[in-house]
Amino acid sequence: MRRFKVRIGEDEFEVWIKRINRTFYKVRLNNESFNIAIREHGVILPKRIERREKKVEVIEGFQVKAMLPGVVAKIIVREGERVRKGDTMMILEAMKMENEIKSPKDGIVKQITVREGERVDVGDVLAVIS
Image (cartoon, rainbow, N blue to C red; front, top):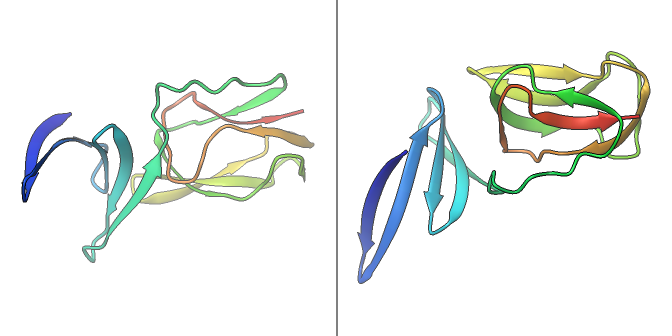
């Protein structure tokens, strides 16, 4: 991450910026983290994310894991909802492409461990199915 000091009027802020890929940046300002998407048309879309230091306690069941690094663009299912093998559970945006995360088996969604806008890495648990 690159560190910058920004002065606005009398106030000084410390800003950390890390480039994730061509489109996404992670920005930390005053201990708050954001994912920033810079689109071709120049619009900047900030989304507040939880700090990665917080570990999610995964309940027992079949873990649906991220197969590639990216950003959770949309969560389609809810906890307690029944899913069938092949149902789309969420959309993961990676390298300017939307990737459908499909249910690997029939069951009930017991837990969703991510939020829209959150950055995930390979192997991160996205959801749990029983």
